[in-house]
Image 1 (cartoon, rainbow, N blue to C red):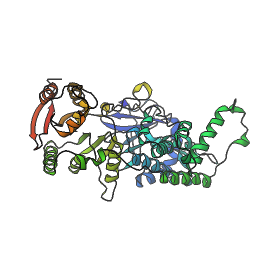
Image 2: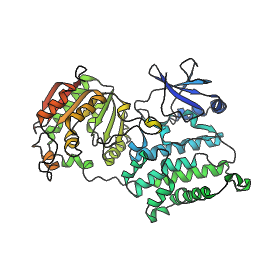
Image 3: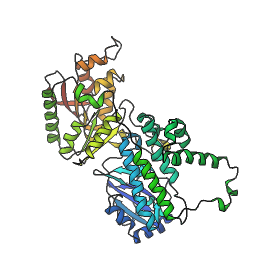
Image 4: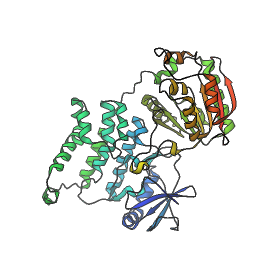
Length: 464
């Protein structure tokens, strides 16, 4: 039995894995709420609506956490991701998912006692709530207990991304308990602070927090000062949040990479040849899990997904991740692709308590196949990471590697070195091969008409 490193904070229960399966122990403090929600059909309704991950009661045995009264079995998620890696629209959809669940729960006498962004994951088909025990019995005439958390985890980061800069979503790494509302209000342009919803849920909310913090003794607050909110009022707050989130939009833009198809330096025959080879590799290896590093708009991710692989599609440009997220969620509804935004020269580290509460990218592997197409020249020449360190890192991420080498005389390499002269790391085909041969066996290679080379490699146990 292995405890989930991100579930230790909940007194109601704990998630653990056993024999590759995911389970949730429910402790005594959570039993009453669990039984009440079960009796009222709350879980069944949310699962049928595809808002909540499914569960099945199973026997409480020695593998369950000590003190467990119930044990639930959950389906395994293909990949855990975090809000600092999500596209704008994915974070927005996660927010709306919470509010849709609230609209169902409140009339039934329940609510979300926890509105953390970490409670949402992609199950391979859609976003779902994964914390069964975040559903609690509503306290009559009480304000929503998770209102502040919802604003800090969803509305605040969405507002700052939409009205300031999308790159500020990276602040999640510093504030994994949610964006401080006072900081967000200070950063928002003055005119945006007074937009409907933003003014109430961020500016006034932040002022109320500051006022509460100044009270010398909160135990002396008179009961008459406590706000009472009935079901109708709570639904009104949820509706107001929903309208505010709906109206908060980011105008997707990218200086380079989103338009890469128009500016890349090779012709359609080379693209077709490259796509055909990628498809042949996928057919040959039949990988269940593919990580597409430097995926751009995901054209090769789509190829892998079309053959049944689950694809984690990673790019450093938030506009590319956004474009792919919008594409897979369009009318054709493509499943099995998780677009993430990440600087691969500074990938997601372990964060939270003891740096283990939220896993690093490497800890969420390995993949069956890692694709690094048109990537490593950027890592070497722009991010100054030597070939040997790239090869070593890639070898920890997956078993097979499909990698593209872009020769020094390629127009893109020349562009990267335009103003560098000789002040850059060594970059050559021979050095690339020597560095990667320390960790991989080269199985196949194909040379495109433009001189770029695709290599299929297998991690060598004898060389690591």
